[in-house]
Image 1 (tube, helix red, strand yellow):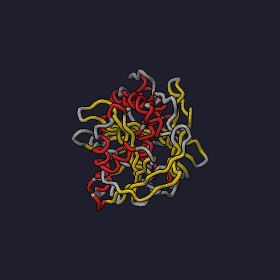
Image 2 (image 1 turned 45 degrees about the horizontal axis):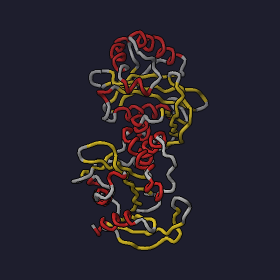
Image 3 (image 1 turned 120 degrees about the horizontal axis):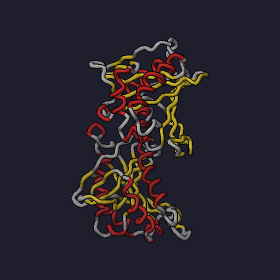
Image 4 (image 1 turned 120 degrees about the vertical axis):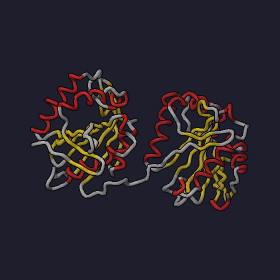
Amino acid sequence: MQPFELRTDGVLLAVPTPADIDRLTHICQDPEVLRWTSIPTPYTRQEAETFVEQVVPKGWSEERDLTWAVRDPDDRRVLGTISLRLPGHGRGEVGFMLAEDARGRGLMSRALRLVAEYAFDAEGAGLTHLGWQARVGNWASRRVAWATGFRMEGRIRGGLVQRGETCDVWVATLAAGEQMRPVAPWLETPTLHGERVTLRRFIQSDADAVVEACNDPVSQHWLAGLPSPYTRDIALTYIHDREEDAAAARGVHWAAALPEGGPAVGSFSLMAFQARDGGAELGYWMHPAARGKQLATEAVGLLAAHAFIPTERGGLGLRRLVVAHASGNDASRKVIERAGFRQFGVERAGDRIRGGTVVDLCWYDLLAEDT
């Protein structure tokens, strides 16, 4: 097969040439590219020459690995690469990378859509399914796949060996005839600023604070589902899963921190969007060092305000929030009531606290018109 070009608004796909070797060498020095791909490290100019002059032409001639340079259509400058692998039986697999100075503009989503259109076209590759995979944690690549309509199929433990390290991978597919647009929202986690507390995304450096909070006897007493002991590996999984929930439109989670910065002093979440049409369930916990200062009350107020702001103004556009506390948890009750929630019922024997004791759950709600 002879290489050919694909073009759309703002993006040109054309085979890499020897004139691109220096640019490709430069792109492949980026730590993010090295982190998420299996390219040799260190990546030398000789590696780029082999790729352009041997690997790419062989892939095209054998019709098994079609590689394009993602280019600026005005000056043909290389911005990245994208490949379509053709293992047979109507299946294809895509892989891509983008230069640091080209990210954040939707270029790779447009490039991927171009390749997918060719892949499914009866006059093109005539595929029935297109696959994507990425090492778990590569949120930028996952966002490109999401924006192009790929459906997340799950996570394969130990599904990738990268430079001798066994890694977990995400996998997703796109089938012929499916719309090339997101099938569900990717919930954003904006930073919310208060006078005494800031709500922001969780980051890995919060792990030690999460361990301290979740090993605290009070946390362990009321949150019986917490592992004991609560380890750093569990905390890192918890932090990762906050992002996973947002990407899957299941919930939005914030770390509470002091305005001057520092590690998390609490966790505040909106959850169960699918189960509550136009509403969500509120959940939270506080680090022991941050209790008794009404930081939780302010954080709940920030979260509720964001929840009720219309979507066109950057909020979630919800109409109702619900929250519950276990009977006897007066600290949580005071936070809920100070934030303006009203009790609407009691779920008898609705929860089990540490030690196996069964307790009632006291349920409260807050409507958009209440604020």
